[in-house]
Image 1: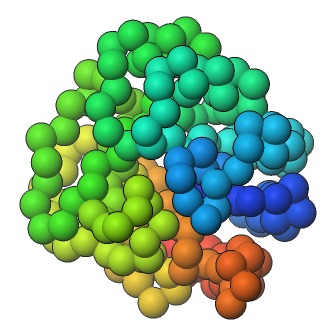
Image 2: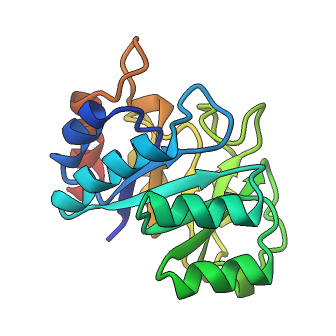
Amino acid sequence: MTLVKICGIKTPAEARDVASLDVDFLGAIFAKSKRQVSAQTAREITDIAHAAGKKCVGVFAGQSDCEIIEICEFAALDVAQIHGEISSNLYANLKTMGLEVWRVYSVLDALPAVDTALCDMPLFDCKGENAGGNGISFDWQILGAVKFDFGMAGGIGEHNAREAIKFNPRVLDLNSKVEDENGIKSAEKIKKILELIKA
């Protein structure tokens, strides 16, 4: 069964709405983004997620190992999702803290060499202007031969979610395509996708 992550949660109110749905992960972004949150807000989001039996993912890009570790600890995160190289020291520290570690690979039409030694799951996202949240998809056909657990992100919405799960991702990562015109996560859009992929 594919797990569902709703990324780019910005406020406790948004977290409460999303946590009430049949999703598995709520994502808080620390990378530079219009959806970026503080560690304090992330802690509030995590508390709401945990109270609802969900896990919280922190999304990092450009932070030092020390910053990542400090934020993960303060915000009580369950998963660190990291864009770029992951040092053996960072990986070891995060594992000691009990976190799962996902490494983001930005792709277009070919799979990169995936190093599964320093991450628990690679997450494939479309290469775009920003480190995630671009709302565009890569060529999913390249996932056909993948033999390990992976996550999928990038422009996944109601129009293509059913197609996405044909590739058996462990995690489907949804963000911009489940927002309303004001950039707030839409419970209705999320519910429609959940109906499609959990049917």
